[in-house]
Length: 328
Image 1 (cartoon, rainbow, N blue to C red):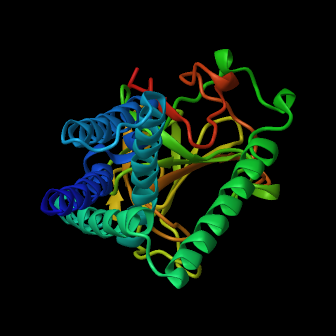
Image 2 (image 1 turned 180 degrees about the vertical axis):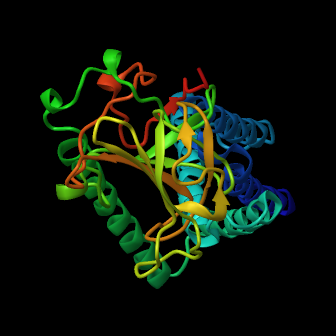
């Protein structure tokens, strides 16, 4: 009985430890937690821990389980840990706003992950009272329905619905608006879930850390600069820069950091020039850079990016892209 009790304690700490690591991972990896490579590392590592624990328990004389069942459980556990990392990234970005240090963000994520791991173990292994089981099942049911709704909206109602309206990427004068060689997540593209529909359909949001460089997606003359505002929320003023591209269209860069414009109106900029620091200002849920192009009557126009090799040059929601932008 003492051995069983000690193994239960070890199992609790395995859950707490892995979820704590998963909660802190977004602070160190940033939006790279969304990449398949990072996800594979998290899933495989967590699954190996689960398999090793099952193996030790079997060596201690506990009832052996089917190998396939053990592998499936371990893979599911690893996937669960990765999903928690994705949720932690979104929650930390929204709650902390990118304004605190990585150490603080990692600490908050670790604490939240540890509590989540302990709760997950309790509901999954300790056979709680009936009311707790009911609450858990209701929460799981609601979560499953929300995920199904989200998946349906994502696959059926997001992304460009008429590619003929977009210019060919091979002849596009635009490149992704951050330094070359850096890979970032597209939070929202054309026809996204939260916004970028109707009049603002042809806009893009890219996850960018507060204070990171914003580069000119296309050369031109700086037409307007306003980086005097701070804070974010529904009624908060935005910080933005617009660049006259010489063909009657303006490139617009929004949610910039307060006081960190590196250009002035009338200044000539080249593609790849650093023009500002990214932020989380205005109608913004989390740190990111919003980019769009408008015509003479301020209508958004469809654009593609020459350095987006896939997806017809049109960044898609929840995919990561590497910038090929640089100063000529």
